[in-house]
Length: 173
Image (tube, one colour):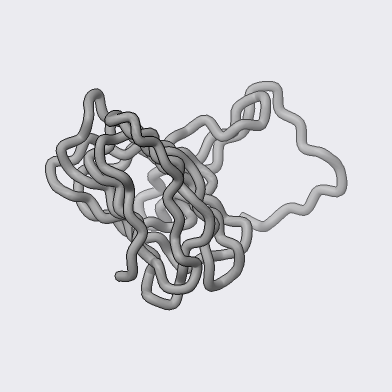
């Protein structure tokens, strides 16, 4: 199918669905759904286990993190300016394991902060050093909502909140 360019707005009463078609089987896979108010309505439910995050599947969407059976590592792709990845804990109780977010390597860093809502009542903000920290570990979370946005091809801006008894930790890989 050819590309089509429109000079005016495209209108739909019931939203849009982005799809891909398997060239061998013809099977259609829905990638993303935009609701009738323009919002992205299809979250990504992540599997338990280590996952390599990719822009086409995870970018610009809410990624629901499961109650892990082990510490799960989520490897972000190289940062691209303006591309965002949002992760929300979807477990039913405090997780007994950790969620670890790493950049693709030690040349990609975090800037920003995470607000730690401590169930032991010593709330604090947690900051990366902005020059070498490329790992963020969320320790035994009860809840979290964390967003990473590419600032450029080197750095991610990170912000959000984590509720747990143990503070999240930024570190080098």
